[in-house]
Image (cartoon, rainbow over all chains, first blue to last red; front, side):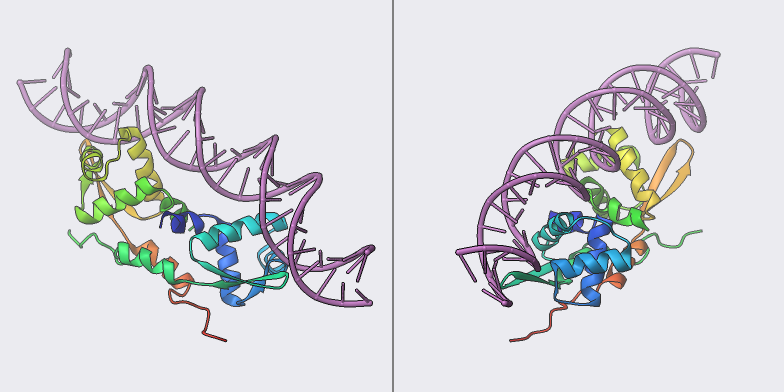
Length: 96
Length: 96
DNA sequence: TTGACAGGCAAGCGCAAGCTTGCATATGCT
DNA sequence: AGCATATGCAAGCTTGCGCTTGCCTGTCAA
């Protein structure tokens, strides 16, 4: 459960989540290309792979192997723990 | 906006938010005591103070000085950016 | 005014995290 | 079989972060 907050703490990993929401089921190479093009991220393939491991262990990305390819899907379910933990509205009640 | 994710990445800062939700308007000393008692956090006063700076710059904690005291309020509004950015439900549609 | 109390500032340490590099494994095509 | 493709593994480096330590500032009461 601690992995969730660590996972979304990195801007590159957040961009990966954005990309997967935009187009689900991408492979590692596909992700690397689109991250470079659309998000200006110049990290190596291994770096992205390590990010995906973190996202997977947090449950935010679901992986499915198919031959020599590895496809990734976004899963936003773990994020609900955040809005359930803290109220999203301002807690400070209006007082003079 | 990047500060939000960094702020909730640390378990001690998350405990501080929990504490402020539980009892709003605490001072620094009060927070240190309750964090030690209820959450088993043995960090020094300076450490907690630095955490509060991070939370404040993320907009998650609102500060109000009163004499020599400094009171802290929880503000959950910035958290809404998370649920607005990614869908909380599973994105992978059932297939096969 | 003196002293106690609440908090701030800044330098330094140790560890974890992100990234790179180099090599290894596995799948598919010809 | 042989080679290119797609990904995995592991060691090493560097930066950032959380924390401590020591001293300074500001506020209130006696």
